[in-house]
Length: 152
Image (tube, rainbow, N blue to C red; front, side, top):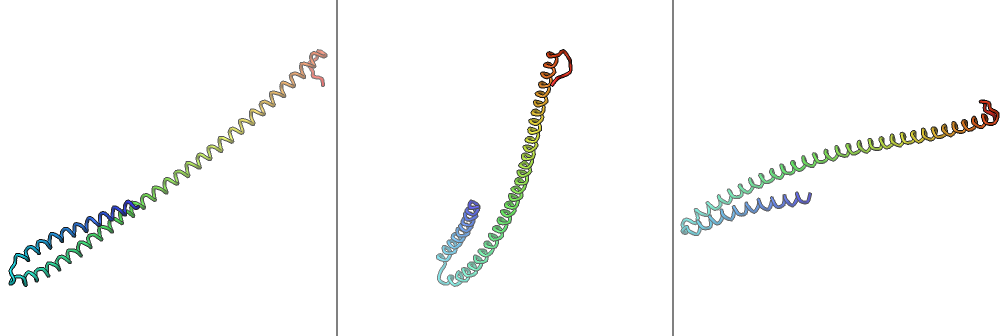
């Protein structure tokens, strides 16, 4: 924001310097013409200077009005750009929140699936151990009495 303020300051200085340069050339021209005139013509030149000064004042006022309008337009443009940037920021925040929610949901689903897989493996392991135990009991009973019925 400070860069924009500095830019506006430099613009205002340069435009007023242009006005000052214009005035300098204008009044230099009047002074040169005034010094060339005789004493009888000095009254006429003074009246001309007065009207020229009024014209200069009018031109200064007009220049100031134009400058004010330019500043207002510049301010409006800056406000529009600021509003656009704020909209983009809000949109990016919403997108980031959406992505964070999706990531959180997918991690939760991943944990759930991993938990179910681990439970399935544990049950499978227990079932395998139980089957092995039953097979061992079945083998022992066959060795002892030759029957296929398990004995306890």
